[in-house]
Length: 435
Image 1 (cartoon, helix red, strand yellow):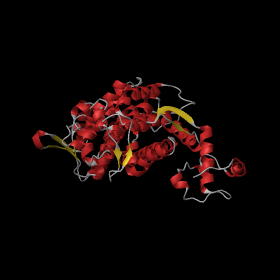
Image 2: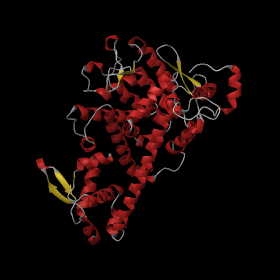
Image 3: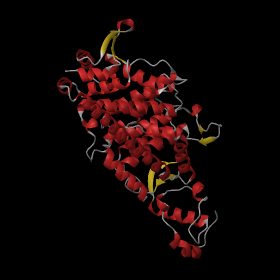
Image 4: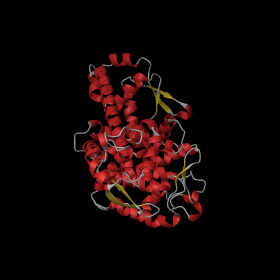
C-alpha cells in the first residue's frame, strides 16, 4: 500500500475515524471495497485506522511462530458487548426462574450440554442426527458409531468441566479434556491425551487442500501449553487489563492456534472456553451453546481466525466475532425460556379447573403433559424421563406413575418387558374430565 509522507499525514489526520469506523472493525479485505472518507484514498484510510488501533492495543503473552506477539484493541464496540455479557451471563440481573429454580434447573442445563455436545461435534464432521444423539444421551446408552462417540465424548467432557469447579488450569487437565473428547475416535488411540510428536506435524487446510494455518512445531508445545495455563489462571497480563470474557475467548484461539494435538483441537479449544467462563463466574454459559451458532456460519468462524493471522496477529477480529456468538447464544436461550414459559402457562390454563392436577402435578409432570398434548401416542420410559431431567430413577418412576394414576398417561409393556408410558390421543379431553 506504500507509505504516506509526514506532511500528508498531518493534512489528512482530521479525517480519520478511529479504530472501528461506524462501529465496525473491518479487515483490509473488506475496507478496500468501500468508499473512503472524502479527501482520503483507501490506503490512507486504512493507514489511519491502523494507527488508531496501534495506539490502544493490548499485548498478550501469546506469540506466533516467528516470535511476534498477538494483540487486541479494546474498541468501544467490544466494550459494549462485554457489558452485555456481564449483565446477562454472570447473574447480575434476575435470571429466569426456570434456570434458578432447583426443580427445573437441571432440565435446561441438560439441554444446553446436549446442544453444545452435538453441534461442537458437527463442526468437526459428525453427522448423527440431533434426535438420535439426544436419545443416546437421555437414555445413557453406549454410542454405536464413530459420530455418536464424538458426541458422547463431548457431553462427558462438558460434564467433567462442571465438576472441576474453580480448580486452576494445568497441563494435565488439558490432556484430560482431550482424552475424554477423543476417546475411541482416533486412528492412533495412543494420541489421546498427549501432545503431538515431531513426526505428527499437522496443518489446517480447506476443502480444496489449501493450507490455511501451520501451527508451531511439536518441540515448542510443552512450553506454549504451560504459558497458556499461566494465562488462564492469571488476573492480569501483558501491557494491560484483560477482561475475563476476553480471556476465555483468547484461550479458545490459543489452543486452536497451537494445535497441540493430532486431532480434536477445535473441540478442546471450545471446551477450554466453557471452563474459563464457568470459573470466572459466568454461570449462565452452562446453559448456552456457542457451537450451535458457529455451526450455522462456519465460514465466518474460519475467517475470524484468518483475519487475525493476516493482519499482524490482531486478535480483535476473533474476539468480536466470538462476542457476537456468545450474545446470540444467550439471546437464543432467553427466547427458548420465554417460549417454554408460555407453553407452561397454556398447560396450566388447561389444568387450572382441576384441583387435583393443580395441587399435585410438579413442573416436570406438567412438561410431560405439554409434550404429550403435541405428540399423541408418544412413549416415555422411566429412563428417558430420568435422563431428560437429571433426576433419580425413583423420582422419575414416581412422576410417571402419578400421571398414570390421574389418567393422563397409559401404561403398557414394551419390548423386553420395558414399561412404556404412552400419551393418549384424547389427552385434552381427559384433562377436562379430571376431577
